[in-house]
View 1: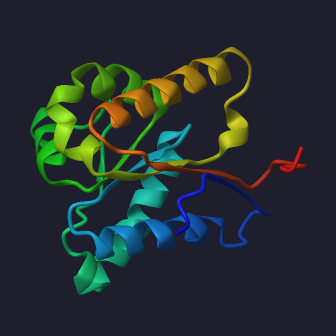
View 2: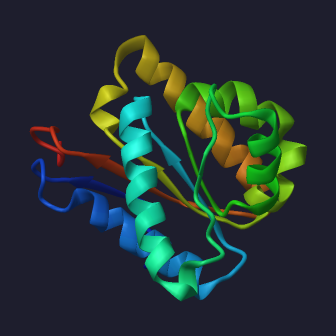
View 3: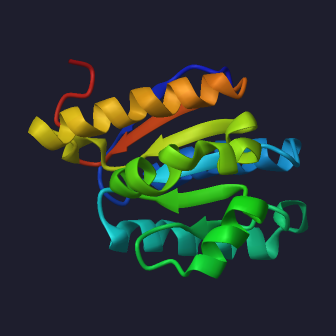
Length: 166
């Protein structure tokens, strides 16, 4: 809530997901135009997190306008168009962000102008050449968000980082 970037590193099954879901959902509830982006290295993890957020938004009336949505290689053209127009929390992966979102950022202007949070889950998975690639994508994302007047908070999450303070 203070606007600082943060790394959440805690053991498996310790509530890591809630540590970012609750602040993001609170921000989306407080500002009915705010948006968020979730990045996952695997489709299964992204689908699991989307399901969790969808379950939460389905029972809380204040969150009924969040419309969380997957945006990946299997997302139909119709759903992609709907997501750009209506979703306030997009669940995707770094490659889809790089290939399917950032190059057409003008079509995502509404989303980027109100981008409050970017969650990078399983951040320990981004190492080596792939890690360098993702780092450049995140820099590009920050530049594009800034172009539209947004300075999102980045929340990196890891359940397996041995010493996150180093």
